[in-house]
Length: 318
Ligand code: GDP
Image (tube, rainbow, N blue to C red; front, side, top):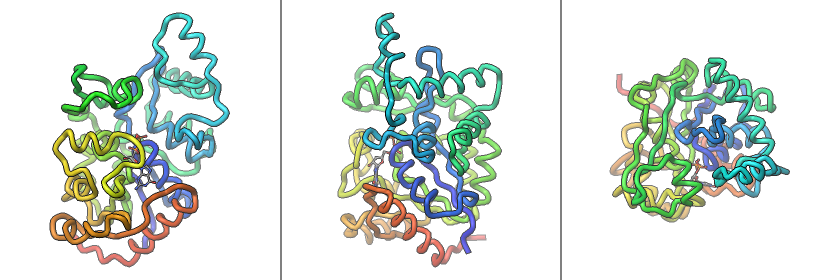
């Protein structure tokens, strides 16, 4: 009997499956480890875009059209900053800025980032645990023809246009796992790697050596949902980044990247023909409809994953 679930998630794709699990499972049986590699300081404030996307989605505050930020947002504070000649390409809304002020103030007082993230989630009505992989700084840096850019500069300011030459996760080698992440990985019966960008959303989490070891030593079943359907991303630069770094830009490439870490990959019905290639080379395959356009899709995919996980015969070498 499966009792506890852990999702390892990035931003938008991560939040979609997280919402499915949060709606279908008992909240006390679910935790989510999010990505902090996208974190950056703007206007003196600590911004954590992927963690906030999870928090806003699971609290129901999210702007569903955009997939990030809160609904009914205004950008008046940003307008003021613009008048002072500040760079305002990072769209930080007025309500959102309130959250960043609170987070920054508590970080300055020396509170642990994990506790702050947990308190923010609870205060906004999230009833599942959103866990940070590390409390230490970890920055995803992207090398392009413009030089090394912090992730948000590549993603938001440059709109993912420059070709990626290299990715690095500054601080990952020396970052230590949080006790919450360690406990969640150790105790999970099912770990689900969300359909997030494997390089820039899941990559920073797995770049922490203690996280990778904990995943390798898990007792539970580890499943990844492919973020690519028919060799295309639903949104974002996954295909371009995979190609630029020499990976296969489809679900085979995703399975290969997670090879040795996952027991199963969930691929879309459109990619069914890749099943035997992946099973011969990397791991088991479950074929499902993985396109999540609404809450019903998210819950259906969750249900399928949980039902299949219940019936999966997990044999771990002793
Ligand atoms: P970001 O940090 O906000 O870019 O978010 P993620 O890395 O979590 O999500 C981006 C990935 O989610 C992209 O590669 C998309 O292809 C994938 N994605 C978004 N929606 C869906 C969906 O409905 N189904 C699947 N399978 N993947 C999705």
